[in-house]
Length: 530
Image (tube, rainbow, N blue to C red):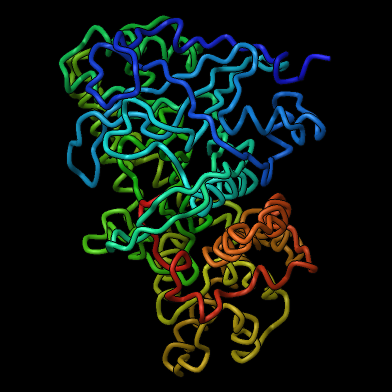
């Protein structure tokens, strides 16, 4: 009987319609005049399935038996190719920490091909950590278990939170040992190797266009933009200057909506280089990301970013705009008009502001944003969240419990929020009075809406998650998996499928970051090492 994987319909349009690298082999090189290089995953010795995401498997009509088969494990470890797979690595460049880095490319990612599923949707399968490509430079093209667990879990957690994201089908250990210096401190160690199968409609990035613009290859730039519009934005019509501008406007709007969702759930990407920005407005490349425990707009999870904090939580909206500006520069040769591109960048800013204000109102259970009152209410909220260490996720969930129908005392109001504070003993009388003052304003504003408490709580709990992939939870799962126990990876995956539900049996996973995790490696800051 033919395996289900061999029945998938691969059309591999990207490599059939765009030019290939004319040089073969895996040796590092500058790839000119091409969008990709043909490569083959590196075989591994003893692959074992750690976990798979059933919802992603369903996109391909793969059953539980299909996913638990040895053939599935062999394919998504890189040992075998299913029928129709034509692996390749993509060529792109990028700005890293604000500086042009030249050619980057898929240094440890290998696309297996593009599948058209039963619903007519296009999904690219990509292995991360499956070996060398021409873009690996001085690296080995591999990935380790700790970073792979984080990527696998976060991809799916973000999807279930309602954040635009690439997906993850599978996580497989390779049986190989990989050398990594986790904090670039001169202490390399052997770690377990792993491969994640990532899934997205496309893995094209801002940097995919920048590389051709930087090389003054306008013909290839036009070819790639045309392919992108025909394949992923067909509703815009035939490629041409008007269509290019409509496309860039849509990319700006999609990016704004993605960043708003990051800010909603407290996600910090950590490395918002232009090569890590999806042209489809999807969260892509889960490296040294993190989740806000205590609300801190200056926090970054990336050790490389520790000094300047370019990619800190509060700066993500500005950085997305900066990155879009680099994309505008890249496609300018196709348009040769400055003002329409600037209009699109202004659209990004306005879309973000409008969506952000509406999003915060939704988190507060308010129906319509009223500029006369709500702008100040939102600004004051951000001020009280930093008066003392306040768990952002817990704060919003507890806020939903405060009654606006019963006249509560100051003490009763503060009692409702106690669980959100890391150091309740530091709540001075002055701090408490500022918090209570804001709560009184908030209650009055809710009463203007005439929304009853039950309905407001339902509204708030549908956008304020109870469960997020807190850094320490991911690390606990990694610690177990490195000892050969995959149970917590799968348990976390299950809990994060329903992030807005109460799930009382998992209440401990919704509580504040424990003190031991404040400075523990993997729980506070991470490097790009993986």
